Amino acid sequence: MQAFILWALATAPAAAQDKAERGFEIARAQCARCHIVDESNRFTGISSTPSFKTLVTALDDWHERFETFYARNPHPSVVRVEGIAPPKDWMEITPSVRLAVKDLDAITALAERIAAEHGRAK
Ligand code: HEC
Image 1: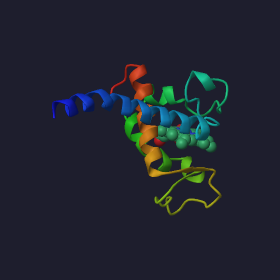
Image 2: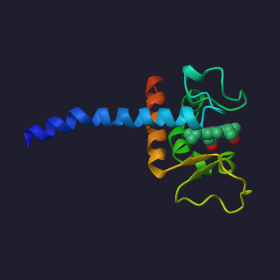
Image 3: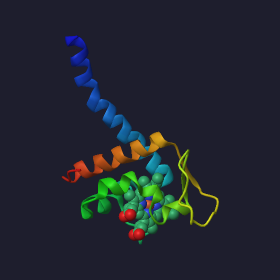
């Protein structure tokens, strides 16, 4: 039992880091053409689109926004999440970003990591 508790304590933060790292890979592949995800894609992205750093530092409700980004403007026209219907009144085009529900968790974990790097609480 004690060994299990020690194991759980040792692996929990590592699991969260892995999830954030997966979120980072997804974001670099799927979000970076519009958003600056971090310093490594500083010169890609669209300048009118907020960087992830700006989102987590400027908005008090950043956590909720990251959890629901796929339903927020302008994402319904480019993002589809497996099993989640897009808003009804949205213009139907061929979405180019396709995510699984577990990818949403990873993206939120990435936002939490970026927020922690900038001293922002949830
Ligand atoms: C086609 C370009 C594009 C892609 C691809 C894109 N975004 Fe965005 N995103 C935007 C724009 C533009 C805004 C700003 C919308 C506004 O200010 O109303 C935005 C805003 C956001 C916001 C803030 C939402 C809000 O309501 O304030 C989050 C969170 C976000 N994006 C996350 C993501 C994530 C995560 C991905 C990748 C899975 C992604 N975006 C992919 C263009 C994009």
